[in-house]
Length: 400
Image 1 (cartoon, rainbow, N blue to C red):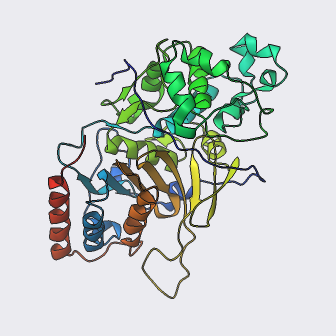
Image 2 (tube, rainbow, N blue to C red):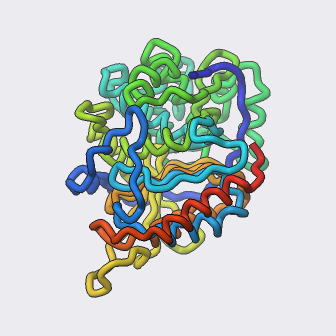
């Protein structure tokens, strides 16, 4: 059941970014592949398939699940070509248990911005925030603040991520939006990017004004209802504004639905929930981000973009390995919705881990299990190993 009451807290991590020439990430491979079976639209629930049927090695999946059992992973769901091929849950968790997804919430707010644009509730991403908060017109910097700046975290409003100081101060304030609006404008909008929970929450407040209803209700009508997402929570600030930076809880299966919607370019079972143009725009690189492993990715409109390690997938060694590009929603502690369009793969994780590299290492293990674009021969022994790995994972104590 939906719950939109109360406060929630979460941690954020500062990110050092710099702007560079914009790049484009597309999410069209899945729509064109023509390989998705009848279980493609999981509104009422995911259809399941043995990994081998989807070209994946059950034994390798089992090894990956076992390897990450003690690394803070709480749950994982793996979908390929519209079929649920593997899932695992720690002790005390069930498939229907909503879990705190933290900053994954931001990516959902991005989706709702696209819906509001499609519905004519917003004119464009160029619309000024002062249309909603006229007091911003009094400052030469904030008067130029636009929706696109909040989406790319380039508002120019001061935000201190050291020790989550600004986020904590906001949570302890009587009026969160007022706290954000009172931050000094230290840069012209669009010039410098700073990871800011304030930008995300201010966007939520703008959207709530634009759509004329609580944003959680709009999400239910435009997104969650059509996707069949019923078990979730989205907490609100003291003024009843849905917290745009964190505070949503979802089941991993429903996290995967959101990833699948984006892999399919915003289409769901014949209906267009989000404009295809918006999906493309939100996955366009607005900020360049240099990852610790040396690879260069970026940040779109609340979506992360990253190339994966080459040569992960198996198959015909005479053919060049595909260049794998991923986009993903991320929350601190290891909450992730990974999407790899070229493989028609969605992987959703919840976790409580201080290791920032862990989620991608888990994803890499899953990707390595993909051996073919066509079904593999059934492997009962490997299937048994996978069942045992899932059972062993569930026996692992978890902090819920």
